Image 1 (spheres, one colour):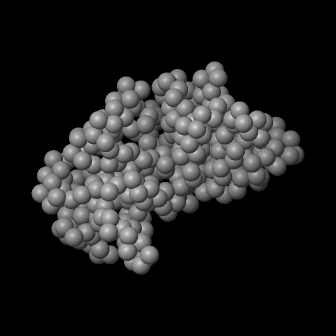
Image 2: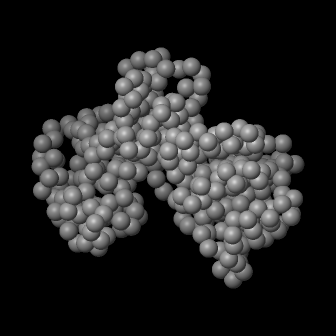
Image 3: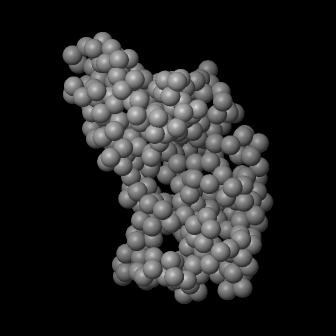
Length: 357
C-alpha cells in the first residue's frame, strides 16, 4: 500500500473542508486498499497540532485543546524524527511568508499542493527560482485551484501548450464573486450597492468587497495562465479596470467604503441603461498571446454566449488555439466556494500520489 503524509497549512474554510473530505475519503474501501492518507500535522499561522498516527474526526477540538506554538523548523524536525515518507505540504493560506519558505520545505523533502496563488504571482525571478529548486530536489508543485477553483483550467492549458498546440487567446469570467454580482445586476433592477451587499451576505465576496472589485485577484489568475504559456509577464504590466471609486480606495476604511457604496450607483446604472435587450455586463480577464496583452475589464456580452448565459457564481473560460480556430474550448462551472476549492486541492493530492513510490 502506498502512504502519503500531509502537513496542512491553514485550517480556515478551505483547509477545514479539505480535512473533512480527506477523512471521508479514507473510509472508502476501494481507495483504502491502494492508498493511505495520513494527516499528522495541521496548523494555522500561530498554532500547530501534532498527531503521529494522523488526525481523526475530533481534530478541531484537539487542535483547540492541544495545539502548540511552533516555528517552521519544528515541523521539519517532527516529520524527520518520525521518518514520514511521501511528504506533501498543502498550502490553504493566503500567506506570502509561507510562500517564501517553499524552498526550505522542498529542500527538506516536501512536495507542495497550493490553493494559495502568491507563489505563482510574485516576480518572474521568484517563479523561475522555485521551479529550479523543484527540479534539483525532484519535487512536485501542483496548484490547479489557483484559477477556477475546482475547474481544470490550469491543467488543460498546460497540456495544450506541452503538446505543441498554439494558444492564441484566453478569455474568462475568473471571479465567482464578480460573476454573481454582474449576473444579478444585469438581469434585474437592483442597484449595484444592494447587489454587492447581498453578495457579501451570501459569502461570495471578501469581507472587504474592494478586494474583488479592484480586479487585482482576477489579474493574478490571468498572470498565472500567461506564465503557463511561457510569457514573461509581471503583475504590474496587467491593465486593470478598477471598479472602486478613487475616493473610496484603500485610503479609506472598509466601513467607510460600505457606508458609501451608493456612490457607485450612478455610473453602474448608466452602464446598465446602455445595454441592448440581448446584452448583459460581464467582468472578464483577457490574454492576447501574440501581443502579450493582459487586461481585466467590464464588457458587454450577448445573453446567448457562454459568458452571457452564466448564472449564480459560475466561472467560464474560453481557450482559443490554432487548431480550434474561431471556436474556443470552453470550461465552465462553479468558480468559487470552499467545497469546490477543497475538492480541487484533494484532486491535486491524489494526482500527486500517483507520481510517488
